[in-house]
Length: 246
Image (cartoon, rainbow, N blue to C red; front, top):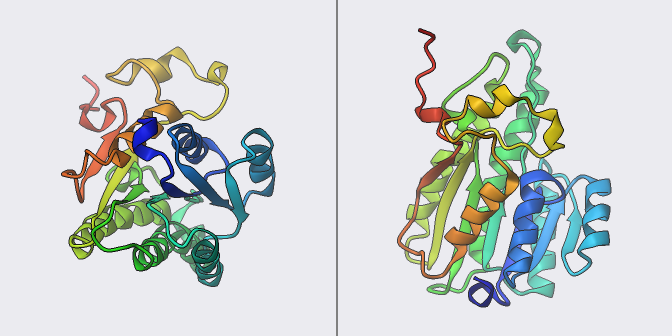
């Protein structure tokens, strides 16, 4: 894979921690030049300390003007990017009657609107007919919910729909657009998990960030250009499991 992504330019949103960090590192190790944007200063500082060759910019993706300013910076320093990973996401699970309009807007703007703006600006600087990849990270919560997840679930459902819309709008540009919907991906210490957490998954374990980053690398492979507009579930089989108790 390394030679296939060598010198490719990749933007990863929300890449300071968790799944996004795993994706950024995997892309860099595959030979790509990587630029991470995130609002977490401590996470970005830690990333730079261990991976000083990864570019970083701190910004809040809920702020459209900050996103546009960042893309002007990309144009100056890189001219264009080949890969966009729309990974960043925020969530606030709280009772419906206590969810404010401001909180709803912040989640939708951070997760969905930011993905649209990033994809639009990415496509503007893309040379038509050349290699391009947009990969969006949604969630299985776009089709299965718990109480209090209205804003997060709606934002992730919007990302799934945005994916196939973008795939069609960009069909003549050389850019493919796909989505990954992770299930339970554990980003903390392994000893925090219980045996029952693993056992409930048909695959026999809870997911790892590398489960997502490996699929991202596969989708970024220039040879894999016939997959377009898809939403790929990586959840250990949980969305295909009958949950009724006998």
